[in-house]
Length: 86
Image (cartoon, rainbow, N blue to C red; front, side):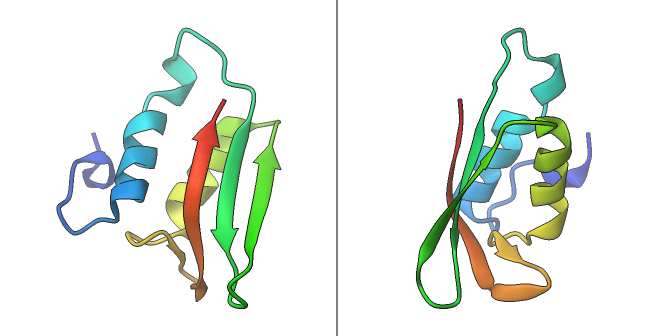
């Protein structure tokens, strides 16, 4: 198990929950068909992104592209503020 998926007291609780819920995504016995991400933009607006295909690769992207506070590494003024796996 990588250190990224272990509980870290300094990690944003939302990100930690995301990591915990998606750690074994491909091995889950039921199929989740949607990943909805709520992203706060620099303007303060919230944008909803709905992913329906290649969820494993989308999960990997969000895990790698966002830091421990769920801010986009390339632009920290963009932050994931919510998500839902359905």
